[in-house]
Length: 139
Ligand code: CMP
Image 1: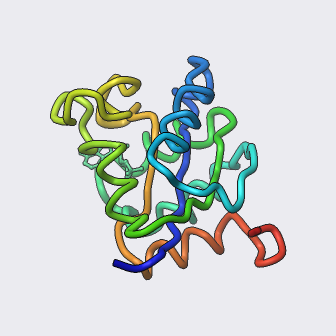
Image 2: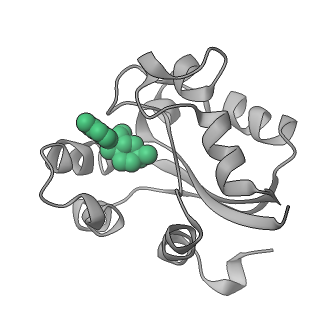
């Protein structure tokens, strides 16, 4: 097992609904160390850049509209196997298919409005972390 970092987002639906506190609580309960955190309101172009890997898919336009519609909380989380563990805590992409008690099952309302995001691999985590944070902002 190795100490890893992953990029985590609390999406505009969960921020607007007032779930930031509960999600931060779950992060701490699951023994992640928050090594960077900020509230950001992405422009449409910044959302498109973040999700560039999905460009051309049928959900790209609604996804980037949604992700630029309001503030999000961006964080870098650290713990053993952080990437896999954060994906476990979030649950499946589609809240209807996510495990009982997972964040997306609890706070998500559809595959698009799914409350949280997490990197899916070390290379993605490196790209996504750099997208939101400078080296000096990570403690
Ligand atoms: P996220 O983990 O942020 O990564 C890409 C996002 O696209 C995903 O969560 C969903 O919110 C959104 N999305 C919308 N429709 C789909 C779909 N059909 N399949 C996968 N992701 C989708």
